[in-house]
Length: 92
Image (cartoon, rainbow, N blue to C red; front, side, top):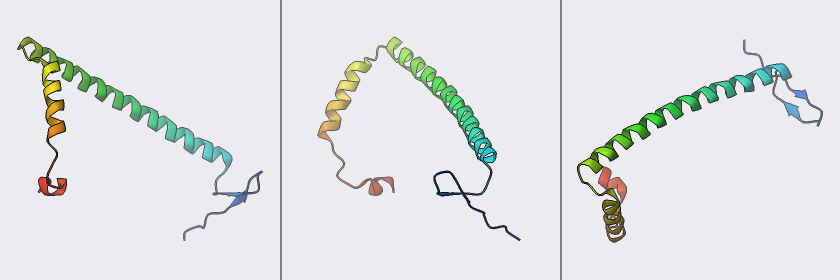
């Protein structure tokens, strides 16, 4: 049978979920540990993406592509052109 959660009153008089203080501390420490590892992995992925982008930028520069000028051209074009249809229609 399922146990119902017990409640206890803390110093301020409000009720907290069942579990000792040590259990709650352990839970939060475990969550933080997991999140730190996830953040480290995300940073590794970001570094790889950044390296790939730099490689492509260098290759384009060697080929004589002026990315600064293309960025200006794209910015000008983006201001002129606004989607005439809702994005939902474009995706279908």
